[in-house]
Length: 182
Image (tube, rainbow, N blue to C red; front, side, top):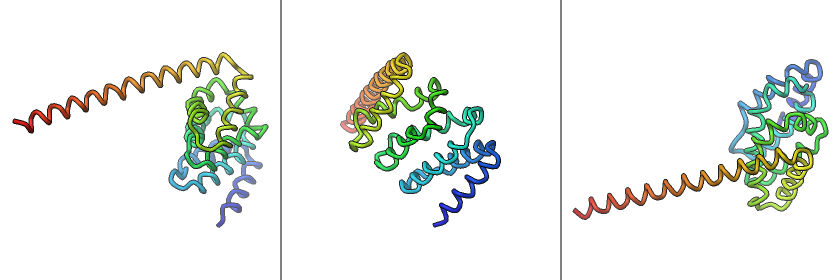
């Protein structure tokens, strides 16, 4: 209803003082809508506007929590949220910020990219994900390989934990059945 006016107001403030980008981004992350996909898309749009006005030193102050949130958006089952998050890479200014900080950002978002490339149901999201993976691979193949190795290790550990949990539950069920039989 009044989102456009508020967005315009924030953009004007950022044009006057780009240092406000840190506070605005932290506020967006604090009040991020997790159950309303259309609002999440609006927040991603607003985030792009804020990042457009952000200077590299300020960006580094909030990039870790920001990309944890973007990673969750990339993994969203709602295709518009995932697609909008992937479209951030189409912005040249944001792409430069990501490029300069790829050693911090890629390990955060790589699991989401890998998951999307394997399992996302939407073809457009799948295609955009592969394009972004290729972008990172062309830029820094060693970093991508390291992230892939870490992802596979984490996946293996997850499988072991799941197996151990299932074994524990089976053991508990067996003990409960034995106790009931007495």
